[in-house]
Amino acid sequence: MVLIKKVVKLGTFTAMVAAGTLRSQDKAGAAKQALQQRIAELKESIAANQAKLRTYQWVETTEIRLKGEMKKREQKECLYGPDGQVQKTPIGDAEGRGKKPQRGLKGKIVEKKVDELKDYMERVGSLVKRYVPPDPQKIQASFQAGKASPDRSRDGIASLIFQDYAKPGDKVSLAFNTAAKKLQNYTVNTYLDSPQDIVTLKAEFSSLPDGTNHVAHTLLNATGKQITVNATNSNYRPVSQ
Image (cartoon, rainbow, N blue to C red; front, side, top):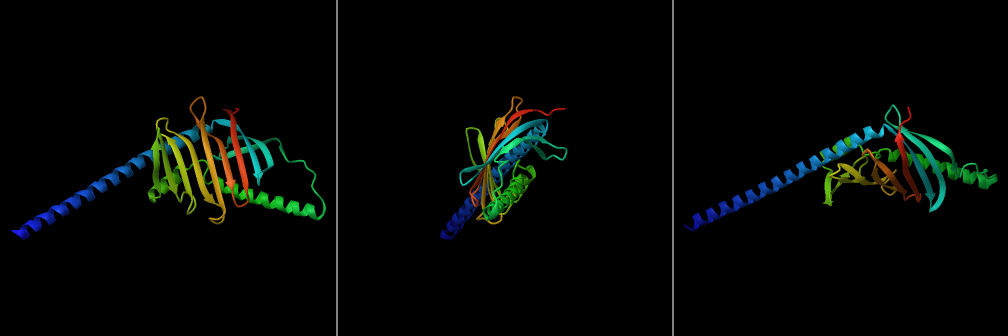
């Protein structure tokens, strides 16, 4: 009789464990399905807005600072070209241009530093293009690789994190307005050549009168060179025919 009771208890315990496992699996499956649905909405929103933005042109104002000191300020007229890439045309003369070059050894040193800085910024610019605008294909790839996860959701804003988005070890965090189906902001944590050469990017979105969502402001910080790039997009209007 005692043996029978032990067998019954063991069977009951095993059933409880199995039931608990099934519940955990059900919860995990439901969470993954909810995340997949949210990512589908995010990708659809990004694609729709990119299509609308192709009908606009705008002005980009950029300020570059080195160790806190303003080095360059420029404005560019922007619009999408036939290849789907943003074409930028300088407006007027950027501040800092037109200065007479220094002569002698000091002039050569300054010129070398300027060339090195220009090369560095070009490489940073190429890196940023891998993240701006957010790429639905990279988002999906991160999810399929198990590298996507929800961070938190509050006040109708769902925060999503994507690891190894464009480079191993990077991270992209997106804040998505679930009611309006629009991106609110996103943050990129990445690097140039090595993980020590940190590059961060913060982007804030805004909406035009017709509902088109666009990047209104970005702040890039290249900590290795103590460079910050502050860019603002404004004066959106239909592309001139």
